[in-house]
Image (cartoon, rainbow, N blue to C red):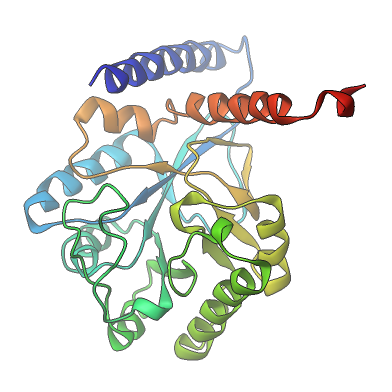
Length: 279
């Protein structure tokens, strides 16, 4: 609880600073680029549908919804938001998608192809309301992609942590999923969301070799100036987030977490480097 409150306080500070810059931009003292925050959801249970709908209304009030897969320049001083969903759970399609359709909000759904029509096996490894969630079937996926607001991306084949696999296995996870989706849906698939947010620079190279143009992570960032292909950070959002927490996430105020994580990784690598290598 203390850590959550600390995260909230730090995010409030970032939000306050952003508001100052926003005011300075309006009166012409500074020039602020357009910004975009990419959100990602998992489940939307029947009990959470109302909360999810309220969050979408909040998004439309504070930002302009756009597709995370549409390369474009962002108008200076404007705030944008993109919605993505990992896993293609039945609960999302039944409870979340209709609310997105009502508001014409684009969404990218990342699919673990080997689990289509099956119950998940990683429910206890991630924060989930229902660890026994089920993935939609292949036929349901084919119907889903017909919806004009929906775009499909890969979530690998078996939702495995790529950093725990050898290179051959990792490439198989990346390529088989892409091939299945393209053959099944009859359209190109050029984006992937890494399961658990786990990847290395080598996995980015493998993804590129497999034909992916955009790779989505679970590190909270905020895009500035444009949306483009490459590595794109996202902010996790759940329907049960508090109103304040959701507003801060959607505004990109949690992006300090990515900066802290990068700093820790840099410090860790320095500590692990043999002394003679630094001489």
